[in-house]
Image (cartoon, rainbow, N blue to C red):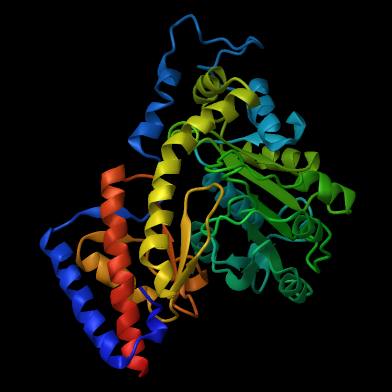
Length: 424
């Protein structure tokens, strides 16, 4: 195989006809395959089944709290200690929430609008406009959450070591810019881990808005696939650099135990945690202590969590291998796309030839392979280059994933050949 750019027009036309023949074969199979979201597979969920066993005499914690009853807003001491060990902070910096960190993120932004944050001069709802910085490509749910509050989203370029700091500095002189979304480790979708230099720069920002927030979504802090990577403690860095109230660090066990049935936490300064706890006390007496207790009893401590996550990695690694090996074998020799080999997380980020991603996704859909819509990883669902496609290999079986990648590679070739012939 030689790069498509070296093909003559006649060769490109002949190759397109061959690819169309392959495409018809897959079309005739009436497939139903799904690579849209990073859902844990049934095999991964089975790893936590033992957590569900609770006998009647196991309802009191070591601190004497009956987990079936009201109270203990902000989390059981044992739950705080577990999250503190995972996030490398102190228990007093932890607030434990419900089943999803996204809920905590939404709730924090909602509180900013209704009451303001600890450093706010007024609720965000009284501002003429609120803007948020969005490293892109990024997590689509962050962007949609922001849009639900009518924020203006500002794309920030993602570099190999994290978001572009110079772009960020250009925007934060505007007092209506209230924060930035960050997935600092194994980012969604690129799998990028922020460098020490980027984390240091973020912690040293001097925004015009006193209540500017680092929304630090550390969703994949314990999710290596090939090897682990480390990031600095953003709370410590911000404290050192005079921004103690700027970061809010989030995580959950949604991809550790049961997706949608985990526990979540936010870590921040003690001032922010007390303020958050005060406002949350008006909306709930407390989150599910039964679920907290089940998790703490099963996960135990940081060391046990890391061991548990290696079992997850053992299930995920062959699936990532299938995706990466397929792309290396079928696409790399043609020199028509780029992608990263992530060391962890849940996605492979694929960059097709510009202005072909939407066509690739459509071709896949027509033969029964669902993908996250092209553009979804950018604010307003608009990828200016129409290039990025997020591949989520975790949920399908190995055999389904092999078939899905065969289809994906054929569709990528199909769309690329069409584009090249159109350019000639």
